[in-house]
Length: 523
Image 1 (cartoon, rainbow, N blue to C red):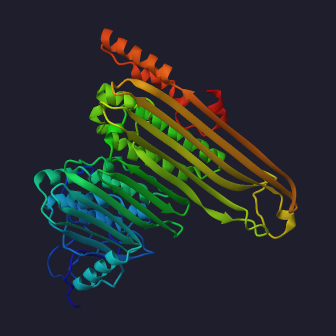
Image 2: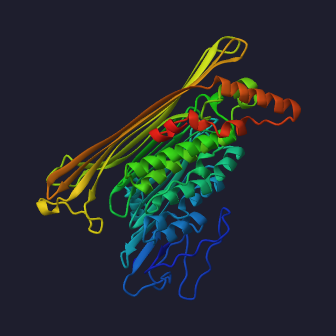
Image 3: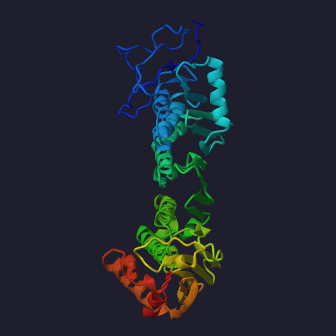
């Protein structure tokens, strides 16, 4: 038979070596088994004895590597290409790619593992061409790009389909020094965790290990993914981080989420207790909106995870002004979080053929913006606005024991149609004179809700109700804050202990965002 020259090629179905528990860079080549052996880096004939027994007598296949290698990356690819799901195929591959790039000192990396029908083993050139084709037109694509402080750009790419995995990594615009290589290595597991989360069904966001990159070494980070879900529908993820902004978006079958943080002004960041309290308050608002608008709980959990993880980046870089009396007083009524705008939405669906305008939908938006005027040694003020809106609608069957199945048959038209329209806003304002004395402290909370319900019996409208609620409260908080600051000064003078956070902890519901009119009225 004709000789075959190429990388590693195994037939029929190769049982890939299991990954070692040790995550260190580089692995030992697997020992040859009694049923065959693997020959690397030389010309082989079909009779060379590199055939492994099949795991199944019903299905046989061959596997080929683009490059001759027995390293952690190649073994991860050979294991992954046999996976039944996307999650199984990409497991460990992202981390191995980062580690291989670090091991090679930043020199380019390119490798692929491909599946072929038994007996259809290609030559080396055909393997390379197919690997390149997979990189250019994959079913699933994931990339990570980092810009170093010295100006070099690191790009890592993963591509896959049902019959192959291809990866590449390169450094352009400079070389990586030892510190940058070490910093890159620390992101390996974080990159893999992010990949694993997105490849799950349903997806999850696991970004903590990735977004906490060393900003002294890297100026920016971008991660992009375009994945095919189990249902065949696309899922697109984009993440971008630098010293000015953090942006995240996820578009998938269940809906879309987007979060944009403005990180240019770190002087408004609060202490850990203040920030956690603000996050908890926002999460309560998100949960209440999901429950009230009958939103998708899994999608809302993704939204919440994105909000927490992108804000958590600031926990390690709290502003220096946080320890100064002036900076601390500036943030008395603020959330302590970076300004942001965010949205979560589910695609509108027309589920009633008789009334197609009655769409099931969920759209929630929330934002925060802060404006500061004036400077130290002059009159100055700071204002923060928080706002949210909810637009949602859904159908509920008249008989909860019977699944709703609306059709053109009027006998199926027994249901109620719920529509929600809610808005909330909170504005806080602090004013100081030229002596840095607090002379103004006010808060206004507004919340309005309306639920419209139309009920039908055999397609005939039987009732319609509207339930509006609206509350607005404006409070003068100057006396409260004067008292809090006086008690803080006494504690610092007599005990050397700050009590500011504990004194404010139980009061913030009076000025932070509240979507429920009843909670605004009860304060």
